[in-house]
Image 1 (cartoon, rainbow, N blue to C red):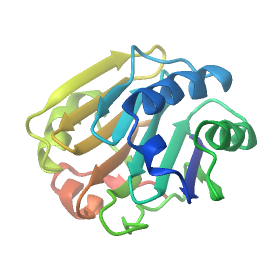
Image 2 (cartoon, helix red, strand yellow):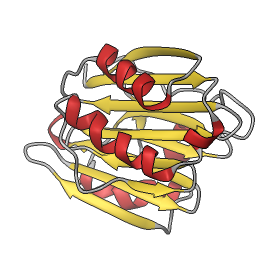
Image 3 (cartoon, rainbow, N blue to C red):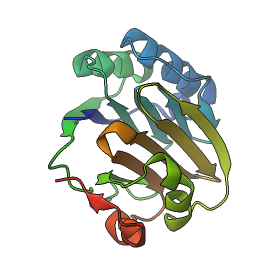
Amino acid sequence: MIGLHWIARAGGVEPRLLEDPDRLRRLLVSLPDALGLTRVGEPVVSGHAGVVLLSESHASLHCDPAGGLFADIFSCAPFDPGLAARLLEEAYAPASLSWRTLERGDGFEPSPGASPADGMPHHTSGLFRVRDPDGEVVAALEALGFGQGADRVQRFEPHGLSWLRRDGPRWVALHTWPERSLASVDVFASEPLDLGARLADLGWTAAQ
């Protein structure tokens, strides 16, 4: 297993809380800090969405002013998903909260990218075997349709790169593990992406 991926959906949240970018930003700071994860700089917040790079991977929040909140944390270091859920509840007081965890690693297939609610970003993710993870990041971003955008990049030893690219309301987070010839990809966009098809020309294959 490369890491744990926590995915949560909160419903019945007061719209005023979801429309508060400072609240979203504060949670993107306090959440990884409380979980013992390492933030790389400050969160990037755009409208009702935000993401923060971690030395272990990333955390993101997406708010729907109609009453929904979607969160995810991916980390190659262990963390307490129950604590993550409690912190989310404390910050937004949802009427309902559901969450699950995925073990990402060998045997992990790219997700279908189904959107949990109309108007919310599709989250498509996958773990791929790559010949030269660090050397192929730029080509992978272009293949995914993110040829341009605002970047935040960090290198971690002995691991590879954590690369966040934002293009308007779309985001892609890509993390590499050169020692294992692996790369993880998380895309948030208005439509789901077929990651395998997009990356096939680069020789990237789903880790199995």
